[in-house]
Amino acid sequence: MTDEMVRADNVHKSFGSLEVLKGVDLAVRPGEVCCVLGPSGSGKSTFLRCINHLEKVNAGRIFVDGQLMGYRERGGKLHELGEKDVAKQRQSIGMVFQRFNLFPHMTVLQNVMEAPCRVKGENKSEVRDRALSLLERVGLGAKVDNYPAQLSGGQQQRVAIARALAMRPKLMLFDEPTSALDPELVGEVLDTMKGLAQDGMTMIVVTHEIGFAREVGDNLIFMDGGVVVEQGPPRDVISNPQHERTRAFLSKVL
Amino acid sequence: MRRPGRWVALGVIAILVAMFVHLLVTNDRFRWSFIFLEYQDGKRGVMFTEPVLEGLRGTILLTLTSMAIGIGLGVVIAIMRLSTNRILSSVAFVYTWFFRAVPRLVLAVLFGNLNILWERVGFGLPFGTQIGKLFGLDGFDGQFYSIKASDLLAGFVAGMLALGLSEAAYMAEIVRAGIQSIDPGQSEAAVALGMSRGKVLRRIVLPQAMRVIVPPTGNEIIAMVKDTSLVAFVPVTFELWFQLTQVSARTFVVLPVIVAALIWYLILCTVLMIAQFFVERHFSKGYGSAGKAKQRLRNIQAEQGGRFSGTGESG
Image 1 (cartoon, one colour):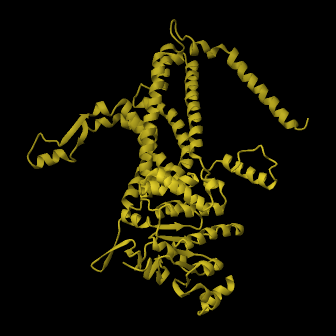
Image 2 (cartoon, chains in turn yellow, brown):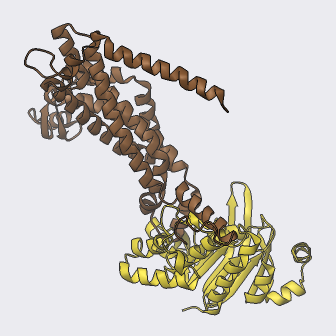
């Protein structure tokens, strides 16, 4: 019904008296990789968390695949959805966190199988086959029976990606996926994400990796102070920023 | 000798232990045969006589049932306390406030006397009698099922409730600490995968919290074994310490009976500590220092070109 996978209209979010998002608009087409750049405190992570309703927006609307996230609209008023409905919406959105957040009491394989088995109630042996092939794909076929604590940061993050993919999401959200990694481990995670992008996954990536944004991104958003300052094709924005704040930020990180 | 201090300490301790063993063996006022073999003509040692074994069974049963109440109710109260619903969390707070404030001994006596308040207790309509009067029905009490209060709220049940309800307050705090010790990122990741709050708690948060919950719970169980002796004041006679003091009262032998009690409590707690070891090991899966040590060894092995080839399997 729509040619947009994600659509955000005028999203506002405050924590107490602190207004973090001051009217963010965004459109992401299916198969597009959208990279979000910005200084810390610019609201980019908060915006990402609003997309799967981990944070409730104070105003505005977010649609994922044409569905209004977290709310039901009735007579011009928004009513928050019940827990079950929100959970249902989240099933088709994968999320990868800065600090991996793998379940430490489960093996790698159990981490990947948990949600498809327990949330969707899928057939266990099918899920197992799928989980094994996903882990193979992220290069961790040999680690399936290890516990997360026995893996390096880069390996853990790749497991986290496989865990999110096991739910067959239509959209993947990445919240600074490489920021907590040692420099020499960043590459393996970015490679995995690149592979995912080439397979046509719709992705929104909050990142500080300018190189990744330039190479893989279809669209680049620069946020500062709770608004989108500038957006466009990554090459254009990075090599020829139009806005003073974008220029200042890029000059510091490049 | 390289470490003289160590040898001196060893010598002192050896002498103290020898003195203690000597005391146990040579002082016949311990009356070991009274404890282990025969406390009266034709009867077994006091540890193994029928009333004392019956009391031991009572102590074990009371520990298990009151801890079951304590843990079950404690988890519920901890979850209520952490709820965003103000009413639920206040109820949980008041509960822990009350049951932690009142000494167990007082609770035990209180529960033994609660049956003075009611003649019968049962399930039915609240204010059933009053509603009946409102409609002019005199005999109506709105009870579906009821039992004489003095039958239910006396002895074993009263003691079990006193200990169990008191324990729930302490367990609630332990479980709350356990739940709060888990990184919020864990529930966030689970919620992002589409899990419901109940599932997040059951599958993700509680299993990890168990690592923090189990050691103090072991403490609580061991403390409970000993606190069961308080129910003698309910009064409950089906209990180890009460039965042993009865033997003292009959035979006028005091010290050996105390020693017999001491040995039984030591045995019970030893069994519990062994059980705790295995439970802790179960819930530390994925955290084990063993696993991490192996990993570290493997890394060293890789760096040194396989020199430590005897250590652990390869990854």
